[in-house]
Image 1 (tube, rainbow, N blue to C red):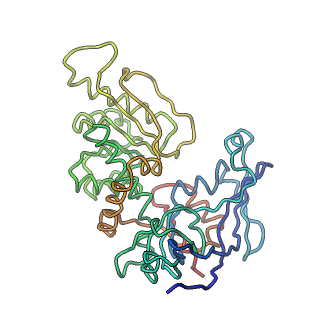
Image 2 (image 1 turned 90 degrees about the vertical axis):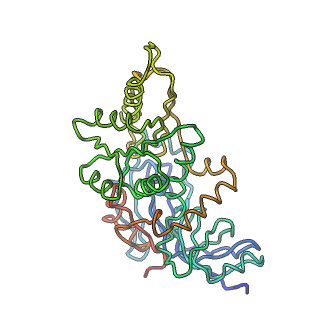
Image 3 (image 1 turned 45 degrees about the vertical axis):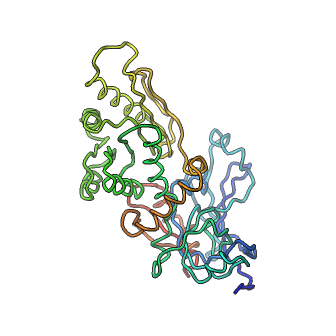
Length: 380
């Protein structure tokens, strides 16, 4: 049965002004009536992923965040430097909705049989604008969760799980046999470890703190290298010798880490080289930058020969490249292993209003391990 009720409520918006200021606010919006192949979902859980923070704050300096407006209608402002404003030219004075993915209960549907079959179901969804009380969305952007699953358990069904699976798929397609992952103690990193352990794939984890080494070792990780340790480069080289990993996915983006990984890959490959070449080993070494935790320039010294590459990797272009059949296979695996391989942990659940409180912004804005927040847009 089609529900003709009108749904409205607050939606979180981000706008960068030409004056060099960021404004984040809540705007009351009417949810569009669902088309034939659409449903309306009452959003009850949506994570704050690093990619969401990127859209939410743009190039703004989060440390300058301050709240103006009222308690029931707050507005957060941040400053953006003149140099950083150059990269924001494409979104000036546009009020953008935020939130890549989420989960909730279908409260209305369009006329198609596929849409009507979802009425009352708890679904995960992807498609942007999830930091809102309601979301009208196509049926093919929804994933029905197992009966009895709470929305909070399915809120992170897409971005992290499909990114982790996409890394493994890319490794296979590029002809590599093992991989390296940085910022590896994150929710995504823990998922990737569980995938690799289950699938028998060697994985080299790079973290920044001793306690993160312990965390990953406790879930079964075999190779964990601490980038803050004096022995890091030697430890990484030995792990690469043991695994033969020649592809890495780097969440940091900037700094020296990508170059260090390439150098250690070359050192590891040189151990088994049968003859010397002034051009380095001829086995291709690949670094994919998929995040920007470090906004500084990417630095490297070319001491790793000529068989190498550094490029970007993003989930949505990857999903378009592999096509609907492989994408659906990956989604089904996520649904089948939702509470095991792809389980997510959150530090705190907050409302839309609480998402604009400076103390919460300071916490989730760190994008650090153990600071993953979950928004419940229907939390009072």
